[in-house]
Image (cartoon, rainbow, N blue to C red; front, side, top):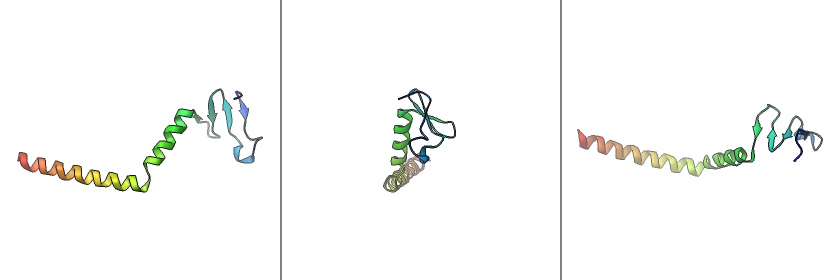
Length: 74
């Protein structure tokens, strides 16, 4: 990759984007490294509907177990 290269010449959708060393700079000035992009993608995948429903069931079970343990100790 070329440092400081503007990507707007490729397509108007890339207007304001540029490359600086190994980082992609978005129009707002944020820098994205490959690791940040992969992490962000993984976080988005974790938040899909089936995972959300699974997390809800786990939390219900955890609250029930906590409630049972609390009642035993009283």
